[in-house]
Image (tube, rainbow, N blue to C red; front, side, top):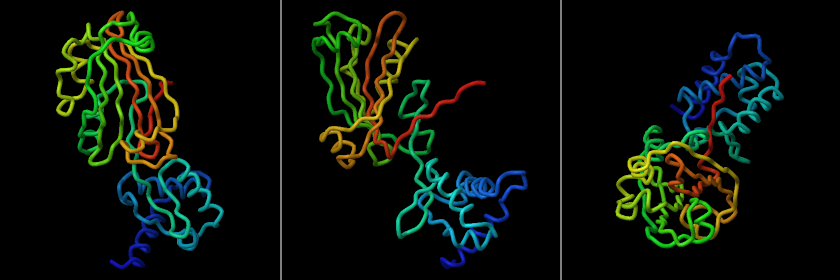
Amino acid sequence: MSVIQQTESMLANLFNDLPNAPLPIYAKVKHAISHKISTGQWQEEQRIPSEAEMVKALGVSRMTVNRALRELTAEGLLTRQQGLGTFVAKKKAYSALFEVHNIADEIAARGHKHKATLLVIESGQASVEEAVMLGVRTNHTIFRSVVLHFENALPIQIEERVVNATLAPEYDQQDFTKRTSYEYLMQVAPMTEGEHLVEAVLPSAIECERLSIDAHEPCLQIKRRTWAGNNIVTAARLLHPGSRFQLFGHFGR
């Protein structure tokens, strides 16, 4: 199928997907495009018909199409490249905001492959800052680890962690390329409580290198502590490239 034939087919199918509900015209166009993307009929990184082509095929104003495309771009479903056109955006990895999950399970649920590289694993005495994070005395024995997680071949998270050695005494003997720290800690000190602090940060030079990102790309940082009963088991700093990751939360009514 030629490019022209493919565009004509996309436009015809888009017209058929315009809902009959009493919505503003731009919202109908937006709904139809969103439906094409969510059902996989329009694939990631696929170029979609131009504004002019949609105006002609759908019989709507350019302002209507422009608003639908602008809102879908703002919502992350489309990307617009100057001089090239509009494309279906690549889906970002995401994590649940109000829950703590195993990153390997989250990646597998997206149909992708998880891999981890262990960068640091060591034991030592807690500094003042580490003691405060873990709720222990200074000089208490702790473990420190740094793990780089990949989704397929792309680095998705730097996991920096300190662990109370009393609660997880064999932490430094684990192979975190074969199972995650989450799996081990949930086995030896099951989590009963947790907290998150989320913020946007600029990564250091070494973090840019580890995540294979440009120097000025913002990252999403999650600082997390988890408890087993009255004791803090671990404090972690999780760093994700902003262009590859998002958080998702759902509120009840």
